[in-house]
Picture 1 (cartoon, rainbow, N blue to C red):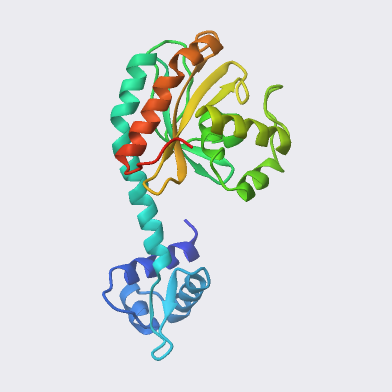
Picture 2 (picture 1 turned 120 degrees about the horizontal axis):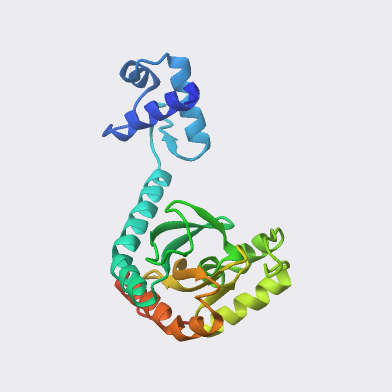
Amino acid sequence: MDTTLQNGLMVLEALAKSARPRSVEDLAMQTELNESNVQSALEAFEFAGYLAREPATGRYGLSLKLWGLGVGLLSRLDLKREAQRHLSELALRTRETVHLSVLTGADVIYIDKIDSPELLHASSEVGGKAPAHAVAIGKAILAFQPSHIIEAIGRNLAVFTPKTVNSLEALRHELSAIRLQGYAVNLGEWRGAVYGLAAPIRRADGVVEAAIGISGPSTRLTSDMIALVAEQVVEAADDISRGLGYRGGRG
């Protein structure tokens, strides 16, 4: 690991364990780093908004930005916990790979999954990424994002197969259709032989930052099969949303 980064993390951890703001000298003594390294780390974290300095004493303490990151992590843990039963039920009903994902930048990250028991199935890894505009589980989330996020992603669309959406206008049109029907479909847009279906999950405040979906080989998860299981996927997403405290409709 980079020494500067390692030193900075030592300083941050020391502050996190302290009940009060600390001086450069205190932190240098605790971490056994020289004061110059401690000062540099503190200034970098302060600039990034993770620390706040007391004007009167010059001591440093944690800011609410770190607290916000922790709240985000707890939110994802709640999401995984609430979704587990529904992932299992969908996997049993469809016999396809089931994913739970969240949006990060222009990608979705798989935060949980259950693999299909079939020999031929869609492969992925928890922690793995996929381009949001090219997979059903990504488009299900994108459809409910603010316009500036959609525009930013839509200006730089990578094309993976002949079916990948390749313009901002086409992306907007598809996301509008997703909002109307309540679910998204991927017909070989990222990996040509893999199809998918997904529906958005809403937090208690109605914000969509996650989705649940299934994916499988196009020879098995055909357009007709997608139409048959779409309501099951949407119901699973709605049940998870209610479990997270959402009480509104699908709009």
